[in-house]
Image (cartoon, rainbow, N blue to C red; front, side):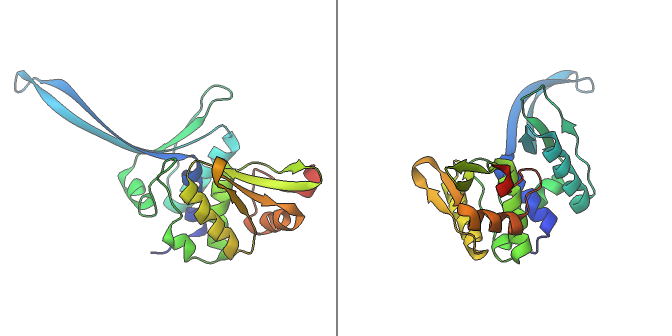
Length: 205
């Protein structure tokens, strides 16, 4: 099974800021035809993408249109709250779940990304970074980028992808962070990964 650049970026964004929900509920419903109430077992399912950045959610929607011809609705919340996109169409969920499950500690880097070319790998990393990475910051004269997430297995897999792209990184297990340090690696990350919203430039100091 192949994965496109756009779909790899969608999956990366969902790994960073997505969640797969399956909910069950029970309630009594009245049937006029039967003239009695009966117990209903109800199941709902969705994949949700959340972020405070409106431009990032609009970008996610554009990727969905390009990949699936679907334009999901963005549910805007009040200022400084997460805005949301909910994917509820069964065929879309089934396709996205072929690659991985979504949630803080559930996701992993799909095999299709590991086997993909450098553009596929970069697109997936870009999605994760735009969703859950930090903008460039400095300690003294040294620039840093950071991925901070509770999924340590996922971080280790991100490191493997970065290694394959010749971008050096370090994982701090104690606080579940991956760092990209120094001018050379930060510039290489900017050139290869090409983040659109969290700009990476040494001139941003």
